[in-house]
Length: 391
Image 1 (cartoon, rainbow, N blue to C red):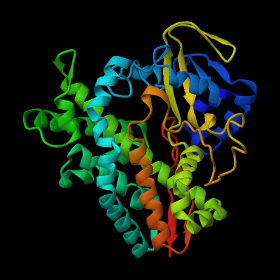
Image 2 (cartoon, rainbow, N blue to C red):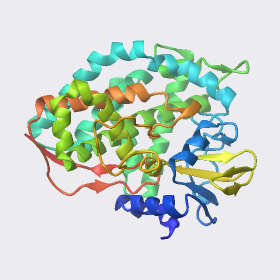
Image 3 (cartoon, one colour):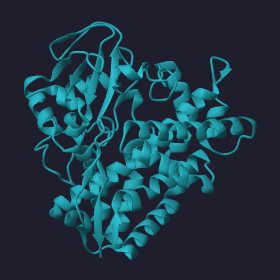
Image 4 (cartoon, one colour):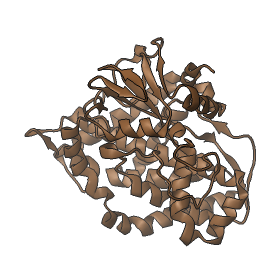
């Protein structure tokens, strides 16, 4: 088994990565990849090592970037500047600035509007009969919520939806890069406007943040907006779509959820997150020499944590290949752990809940209506296209 196939998008598109990760957990759980198109790095595939790295932001820093990038692309421009990539002190300032928007009291206020958007999305999909669940249903609610948080005018949202889709799903790397640039340009204009004319939205909040007595630079505001927008739309969309596919492939679990939605939805959402793990990897850099899983990691070494692999580790999960909507406990790492635990965790769970509730309430039968196409990304996994027939 060659672990380097994990660096080929086709491995993830063809759903072969779990076979590789299973072999690595048994034979090479902390594996060194020699540099090539990518820098040299350690692959971590077991729950224990991944959890250890993610829990300690001092020894395992995210400041230089959390995504494995080809050497030709250079360093991550957000390194040390965004919520996800900041060193502990800066991370704390940024997290405190935005955390209130994701607090339970604010989310409770949003519940009714989230349910309404989910209801409309499913109703329109049902009226159409045939849908691409990824674009026509799963994308609707997260885009609406994140755009609302960021104060994006309704007239601009269709463009951002298209750019976000192309940034991950376009056919070529060039098309994906150009779409991402369009998102960054949009947020640059928006941040400059909100710095002069602040409103009640997250962009305005970020423009007013000070770090070490200085306003957050506009470029940093833009990178944080981009991170919040992409993270809050793409990962929820893919989790919803992959979760729907998992339920279709496990009809007994679908019926279990239908029979007692109120009693089961919370464990079902966590199981969908574990089983589908839309975030494929996150990366850290060692700030000092450390022993990890019996291997000597040097200062400056990169460590790639394969989250779907950690979430299928038999040392942590009983029957990890089984999809069980009543699973508990469920200590999955799909949304991270420790100080960098996803700030939007509760929001994402409520969005998944809202859409699942509406599908179960409105739809009697769901069947596949064509081949499932998967993303060929090392960053985000899940269906690119999920054609369904709704009755």
